[in-house]
Each structure stands twice: as C-alpha cells, then as structure tokens.
Length: 146
Image 1: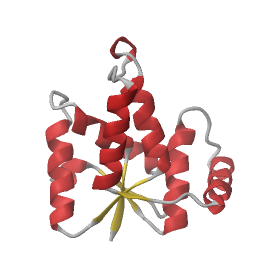
Image 2: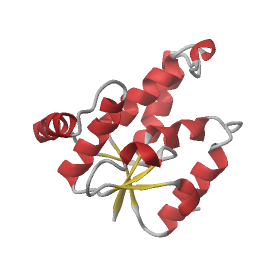
Image 3: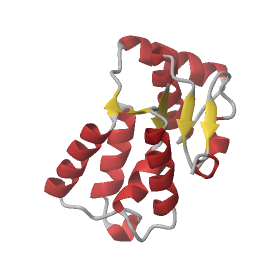
Image 4: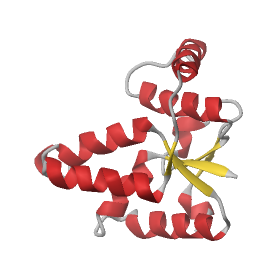
C-alpha cells in the first residue's frame, strides 16, 4: 500500500538535531520494511524548498539554492513522486469549498486532493489533527509506526 509523507516528516530528516528526526527516521524505516510505497507530492517539494531556502532567523534552514537543489533531488530519489493531473486541482477546489478551508490549511487540502486522485488514504504526519476533517483520509502519527 501507499502512504503520503507530510512535509513535516521530510524536513526533520535534514536536521539531525531536530527533536522529530529520530522518530521520523524510525517510522520511514519501519514502513519500508513493511514494503509500503512511500510517496510525496509536488506540494511537499514546494513546501520543503520554501523552508530550506528561508533564512534560519525566519524559521528556515538557511540553505543555499545549490544545496537545496541537491536535497530536493535526493527526496525524489528516496520517495515516489506523485503526478499532479488537472483532476487534483478540481478535487482541491471541491474540498476547500466543501470544508470551508481558508488560510494555511489550503496546503494540507492540496495534499489531500492529490491523495484522493491517486487513491491514497493514509498520510504520515506529526500534525494528524490537520487531516481528520477529510473523510477517507487516515492521518498516521509516526509514533504509531515506529
């Protein structure tokens, strides 16, 4: 089965000092050992880029573009990158209207739309509460896997 990785799972992988890093790594390792297909969406890579290249003083990682590009390529080698067909936009639009989503939550809704289009029902995330409003989506906290 496939599971989508939230961006908050990917970012600690680059920050060994981050308190979530060990748990994220164990969860990914455990899922791989269970032959799960670990997927990411274009949205994950855009969010990753924004944080990776933002200055450290502004809650970013302060990476140079060259290094961020290397990390972006590594993520695409490590995980299955889902396509984003036009149907994903239509699904996102339906979801934001149905659930009256506004603000930053629209990014999570975009992930859900891509999941729905690809028939993926689970997302590995530290923010499981962000996804409970979506019927058919099961948020999985890394502590439940590792």
